[in-house]
Amino acid sequence: MRPDPPLPPIRGDDDVVTTEQTLPPRSRIVAEHLAAAGVDTRVVVLPDSARTAAEAARAVGCAVGAIANSLVLTADGAPVLVMTSGAHRVDFGVLSAALGAAEVAMAPAALVREVTGQAIGGVAPVGHPAPLRTFIDEDLQQYAQIWAAAGTPHSVMPLTFEQLRTLTGGELVRVT
Image (cartoon, rainbow, N blue to C red; front, side, top):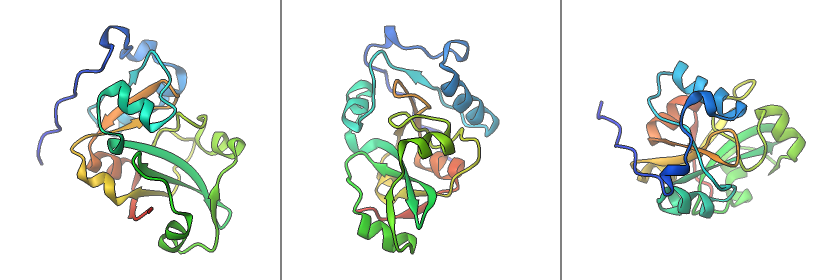
């Protein structure tokens, strides 16, 4: 197994919180899940919100496509997590066909909070009350390092594609 790439410097590193004791409660849950899974990474709390892929990419200094957006959708009424490249907008027809679902739609905010324990804009791929069936945009494979939300709109974490796939048990799909 090849070693994980080194973590890049974060813009505004002086303002970044990375100690587990000072993480927001929802980010602490994510960090604990990562540690229990043996994933060596860090949760980074940014001084400004990173609700959008563009905001997150600017904050960490990466390509927008290397941001892994966490979208909670419903597929035939059941909640699923879809991890998409920040460079993509989901084509619901393509995704519906890939999932074998008659209907795919965005989950309402209340359902997102219920199934993840997290708010829209900060949904992490892990740390939910119960695991969600997860699908991962195949285009995320092209990045040596990807960044995902870590439980709040101000927290992110770097992962390799393989770490993301292993942590979530995610199935590869095409979303565009």
